[in-house]
Image 1 (cartoon, rainbow, N blue to C red):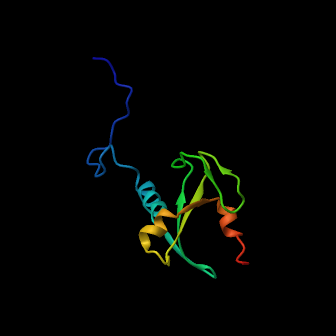
Image 2 (tube, rainbow, N blue to C red):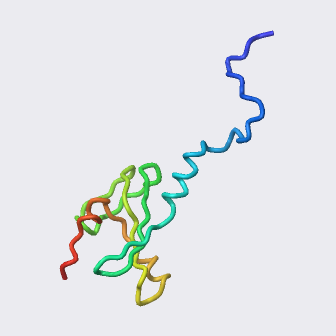
Image 3 (tube, rainbow, N blue to C red):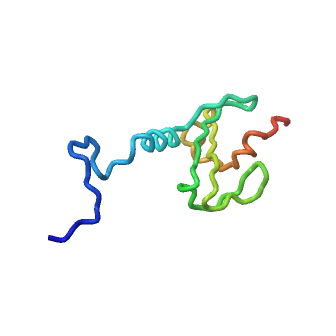
Amino acid sequence: MPRSNRPNRPRGSSRPKWAAPPGEDLERSRVGLPLRETAPDGEWSVRRITERNAAKTYTCPGCNSFILPGIAHLVVWREDSLFGPEAALADRRHWHVRCWQTRSFRY
């Protein structure tokens, strides 16, 4: 009988073979949740977009340059919009991480 080149799987493994490793599930769920930030210009929801999930080209409002596919960035929208949460979500913008951290609050 020919030998198999596949390593033996440990018996009694509680994790199905299609499930992600335990640490990866936590990271994937944490990245998808928006964080709330309070700033002098209002309340903001901030969601991280990983390199793997960045698939389109966007223009950063902080520096007016492109955010290319494959570049980690942030999606930001107002929590305290005058026109409601649906309008705030429609007005969300994609920012470079550094541009969002160093934005000025001068008006």
